[in-house]
Image (cartoon, rainbow, N blue to C red):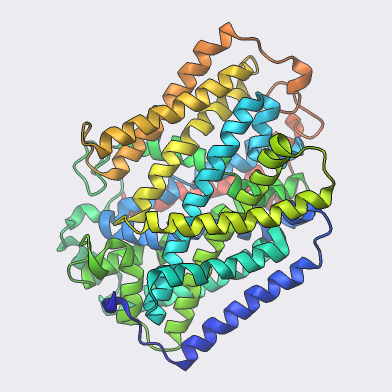
Amino acid sequence: MSGLRLDVDFVDYLILAIYFVTVLGVGFAARRAIRNSADFFLSGRSMPAWVTGLAFISANLGALEIIGMAANGAQYGMMTLHYYWVGAVPAMVFLGIVMMPFYYGSKVRSVPEFLRLRFNRPTHLFNALSFAVAQVLIAGVNLYALALILQALLGWPLWLSIVIGAAIVLVYITLGGLSSAIYNEVLQFFVILAGLLPITIIGLVKVGGWNGLVDQVQNSKLGDAALHTFSNTASTDNPLGASWIGIIFGLGFVLSFGYWTTNFAEVQRALSAKDMNAARRTPIIGAFPKLLIPVVTVIPGLIALVTVQGLGADQGALKYDYAIPLLMRDLLPNGVLGVAVTGLVASFMAGMAANVSGFNTVFTYDIWQSYVRKDRPDGYYLRVGRIATVVGVLIGIGTAFIAADFNNIMNYIQALFSLFNAPLFATFIVGMFWKRMSAWAGFWSLLLGFLASLTLYVLHLSEVLKFNSDLEESFWGAGAAFVVAVIVAGIVTPFTPGKPDNELRGLVYGLAGPSTGADVVITGEKVWWRNPVVLGTVALILAALLYVPFW
């Protein structure tokens, strides 16, 4: 790791120290607003849309986005753009326009709680447990990436960097709950951009601007194919090793919709909004910066591809995951280096905070309150939530060492999404649009969809089934989970009793509740910039147009 050591000075340390003090200060300030468990877990449902929208996208700007997408940019080129324009924006718009009226209108406190109301307690418990496991695994990814930067900055051993990074997140989440996480995520959004933009700008200057980068990428090991998105996807002979079917169905539909519409770590931000319209606009507001995030992730990955000799080695400091730290080392002067390091630290803390706040809410409401200790005073569950925060961080420390074994943590993340999010999305979407789907159909489709994806993953690891890349396996694993879950729902439903209409009101289409009627879903606000449908349509059009230069 000596090759990653950054040449920092007093100014760089000072910038980082000011950021840490500010983050902890927000935690102490938010603590004064915590009066009950709803304040701690859902910010009292009082946040304006612009705050929740920026927090929504900032919560996603963790290791997956910064380290993982830059690594993908270096490994797969412009095909990484699929994770944004097909693999994120459509699902974010769908969440805001179609699904948030049901989440917010039903007044549920979590996604697993919605499944309990729609299906039954076994479905609820399985999802709560699988979500909790997924969140601590993903928290480990963010924590590992944070530790990587601290290790490069200070030369500390990886384990010490992990512990220090976890302690900072632990303090401000335990103090201020979701409010602390959200306000810090808004701050972190701007700090992240301030930290990453210099890498892109200085890197482009070094390679001779955009035209210089294009010329050098064409002469790299990836070649001209790295500069296109769809033109080489009639087969799997492309850097990503995936055809357009896997990209559109596996990534663009199953993985994307599964993550953005059912991942409570994201949905929680929208549930904290002050009213229905603000909740619906939350993911759509987040979609606009999402369109442009590749400027500070994918482009630096391409710059690393052509400027870092030997990038992509399985060992040492040349793994794809180190693309961003290597560029920081090679490109940035002191002062700017401190801003960049602070931006990266902010991104990893935002991602881990989202995982931990989602974990403590689901553990407290959906596991502890539902199955261990019922009907206790509200203050009791507030204490449980704070204890769960500590436990989640401690487990995240352990799972960080799992992430350290992967050459590209994006591959690891996508494997987790195909296991946990894909079957959940299938169960969720069929149950929302097909009111006859029975409670036990929900449970078995969720379980067997998970097992289908797990089977493909195990066969891939054992090389019984060979895919072109780990990511291609994730695409097909997600597709298999989705198809199996849908088929199981269709098979089990006729043989098991459905729920009566009065228990499904406000949870499925055709049986609207007081806050989920067609007027809410279709018309929205008359002022265009407050209308979720209009904003969502603009975001989709922009996503399609951005593909044109990189087809």
